[in-house]
Image (cartoon, rainbow, N blue to C red; front, top):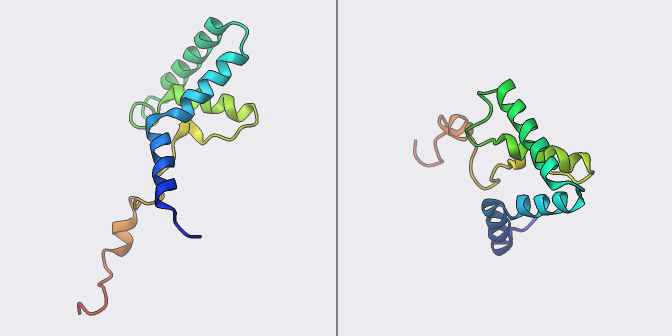
Length: 108
């Protein structure tokens, strides 16, 4: 598949700015009868996630995003867990380890 830099940049901007999360929150709130109860439910569920696994949350993974992504997944709309997606164009943590021992051709 051919890369489309302009489109890739747009997708990256949407993810970075959180527009997808914003749209999901708007849709969920519009579908709820009592918004205040819903917000309190989500906050309580997020607090229980943090209390049960303190080490997992606080860095890049946020408990509130985890709750919202679970709600969207339950509604039948796929969202990655806690809206966390790796950048496919950045090498992962094992990239250096896998390629550290290999020398480019012509350097030996």
